[in-house]
Structures are given as structure tokens and as C-alpha cells.
Image (cartoon, rainbow, N blue to C red; front, top):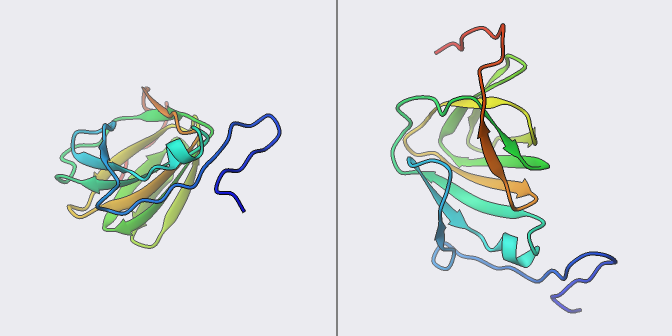
Length: 144
């Protein structure tokens, strides 16, 4: 079976394999994070992105309210934890071996992280923008 898959009206996809040693660092959204590209963007011809995000230094303040211009974002925490606040008012403490699926356009705010946070982040499509926005009206202040 070929490593290249072809589907009707889809661009060709190819096998993508990465190790910590071969996955290059990539530019990212936050200065306190380091991003390692796992090659999925190229392998999926832009249909999906997968990266490992690691803390360079712990967050000293929340990221600010934002949403992502993508279809979806999936996060699986490998090590450490992150506190997330959502437009619904829900605050989630996402820790090692836990995951979350975030639909594109859902407003959220990263409140704090552990100093050893490491996570796998997958988005569809690969191209994902970040748009700053206001805190949702009527939302109570987060605990913390």
C-alpha cells in the first residue's frame, strides 16, 4: 500500500514521521511557549496541524480572551497543567493525561499554567488564526 493517499477532490497526503530530534521548532502564538512541528501539516497537505507545545517559563498573566479561526482544536496534556476559562463561564483545570476538544470560534482565556506544561495540540485545518476579543459580558471573574 502506498504512503500517499488520494481521495476524490482532495489533495494528496503522505506519511509524516517525527521524533523529538527531527521535529523542528516552529513560530507560535505565545512568547512563553515553545512549539515543535510534528510534520502533520505537510503530510496532510494542510488539512491538519499537530505540534508539541512546551512552557519556556510559566505564565505570569492570562493570555487574554481570544478565539481561533479554525474548524477545531484538540489538546492533550502530556505533563503539567493549564487552567482555561470559557465563554460559557466554565473554568477547566486540564492536567496530565486529560484532553479537551475546542470548536473553532469558541471564546476562551488561558489563565495559568504549571512551569512544566507540555501538551499535544491538533487543529483542523492546519492554518489556525488567533483573534483577540473582549471578555464575554456578564461573565463572573475566575477563581484563582
